[in-house]
Image: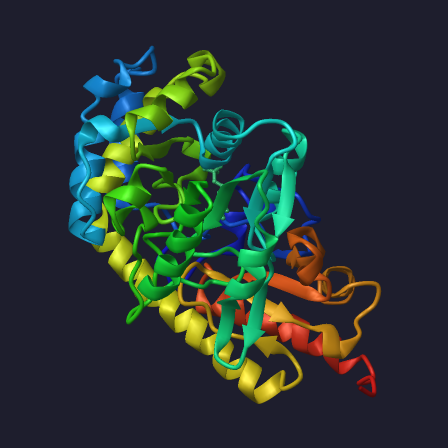
Length: 390
Ligand SMILES: Cc1ncc(COP(=O)(O)O)c(C=O)c1O
């Protein structure tokens, strides 16, 4: 299957949740997996691993070569100079977020979250019994922006952590240097730590570019744990591996107080797949990014022409579109409406925190043909609903 001619029958053979969770007549545009086939070097590496039954316990993480590979890659891609010794491994980014919250704060402490937000952020803070300090991004004329006055006034003496998502899911914002510097200023003034989820760092559309917040200054680096992964950009989330970059030994020591075995073991398949992704699959990623850029522009055009009442800012990063359907008054929610009447499964905005009510998140990492089918189904469903007076 080429990028442009994905076959639904083949996609349905996959056992992952994207194509199995809903009934067969539903087109899935929800969970953040891409429909594209994975890069050939990753397939070759996995095939080789299986062909020689190389599925025993892998060597220790430090001997895999991955810390060096990862450090070299972030320098090349993001101009971020780190030492391989700062790089550690987790099974996935969300696991590392839980570790970070437990290591860097205590029960009842405040954690800043910029809503709307990837739902596990809200759940994690809740589950480890910290206090969410919601700082909504505000939708301005040109896109979502950080309301710095609100953020400054939300910080209290018990606030410990900024749980940053950059690039931001679901709005697709790729924060600028000056925004990150203003955030850094608040962090330093209030003696906070940063857990920075940068899992979408490789999925940024030109002319934007990703800036790891830890790269701003040594002072910020030393209070930041940066989380990255090959899983989103290379479409291998089920392979399970995430990188943590500790900006200081003291941060790492705090993490290491939590028993290492709770991270689970390193998977043999993840070692070969991630190594291939980071060293041999850049051409594949460049092609995919180009294609996603086209899908993003197609969606923007569609909103302009057919959905004039829908609020939408084309994402600067990620393959996720965030659509404000509030003006349509879809009942009981846009998510339920499109699932029932369009047979399209989208991300339910309400799960992304209070500012997400009336929104949906659409995953556009599929072929243009399938994306058009998804949009066409949504159009037909919308045509059936009388427009509500505002
Ligand atoms: C911002 C963000 N963080 C984390 C994850 C999940 O990462 P992992 O599977 O490594 O836990 C996602 C998945 O979509 C995401 O969008």
